[in-house]
Amino acid sequence: MRAGASHLCGEPLPVQNRQRSVGGNARKSNLARALAVALVVSASVLGSAAPANAAEVTIVNPPTTGRGCDDNNVSLGQSFTATASGTLTELGIFIAQGSRDTTLTVYAGVGPNGAVLSSQNVSLTEGLDVFFLPTPVRVSAGGSYSFAIADGTCTSGGDLLVSFGQDYAGGAAFRSGGEPASLFSDLAFTAVIQTVDAYPFTGFFAPVDNTPIVNTAKSGSAVPVKFSLGGDRGLDIFNAPGSPTFTVTSCTNGDTDPIETVVAASKSGLSYDPVTGLYTYVWKTGKDLAGTCGTLKLNLNDGSNHSAKFQLR
Image 1 (cartoon, rainbow, N blue to C red):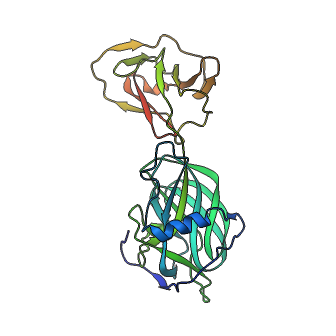
Image 2 (spheres, rainbow, N blue to C red; image 1 turned 45 degrees about the vertical axis):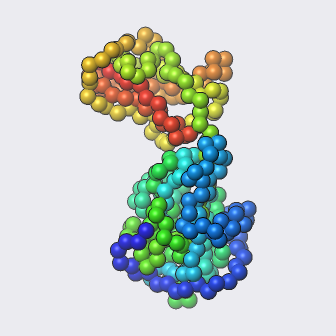
């Protein structure tokens, strides 16, 4: 997506048959798929209409006949929109010319100013370099994320030129600090998201009542929030750090029901009972929440959200 003025230098990329060279921690297996897709799509998002049980979604912004580098700033990057909820496992960058050892970093949000989600040393070489992320990144459908290479500057020999991509509606290229890099629309890239089948959620179970009932509990107590996902899905079921979340809202009139059972716990935590087939999230409420009402929300990594209402006294 174009924006603002640019300080990039670029030139047309001659059409040629290029073999992707593999540097360091790059891999070859997605090359044929990504390039084949690039020939038939235009700044496309694969998997936007994929079935719910799809195991993998690939975003591809194909290269154009342009290439370039940054003549002033250090990093070059691209923001993009996740088209499915799941785990971002791979990123691919099209390099038009040259090679360089640098750092590849993934950020939350648009640009390089969000939280760092993953970072690794990489070797960029001519062609499509695809890298596994050392820290898998949880993403949500419709969410914005960004990646950047730490050294995208031109040198006197112009030894590293990135491939320009087509005009990608889901994000924009950027330079150091997040300034737009708009001599070209976007970088050419690929991103692979491993999706998660939708969980057959049931719950909540006693002692927590489902909406619209408002559960009442003493602030500082530890409430066992029980639910089922249709089996053991492991303990890495939440969509992002910080989930579940409690959002304070205004108290409203409605039916209430006290939490009959609390547990002894000094902090929140998740466990699974193979006998009952239930998950238990022990929610350690804060004493500072006394006198408040709000919603406890479980954000799961299949993209679903499940909430219960509370009033803390």
